[in-house]
Length: 217
Image (tube, rainbow, N blue to C red; front, side, top):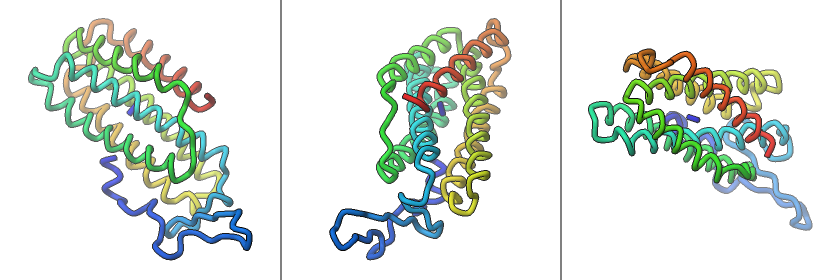
């Protein structure tokens, strides 16, 4: 599920030199403060942030595996460069969320091995239907991810939009790029895939299950 977006804010999560850590007298407590937002590991809602970063990391990992499967089948065809461009953006998304997992001390979902196999299988399987099948998969997945990101944006806005400003910027940028991938899929004949409506519904149902499980496990 599908950072080029990280380039838009390359320093958002970098600790400030000389002012990034403060230790208590006994050295037991470390407070990490993030540039401009005032976020610390103590003042954020850990349950919300953990869930967001865990599931988004899993989603971007899954999206990478889907595009890897598509490229394995269609990489040398005329649509190969189109898929590669979207995959490159997903690689950047995954890199960013991997960094955020370290920064916020979030563990990955235990389901990563499953998403590794299932993501590749979904990408390759739909690509075997032709470029239309691959693009139908892209439309279904990216639409689901964009909807999911919108839900996260609403949640963070309800929590504290100023405190979570930098995380909101990352999610909004990635959401916009996922929507670009969605539109690219439509422009490359996704709706001409065999049983498009059924295929899209099945993939999106799978996405909902993957999101639910990855948030919690």
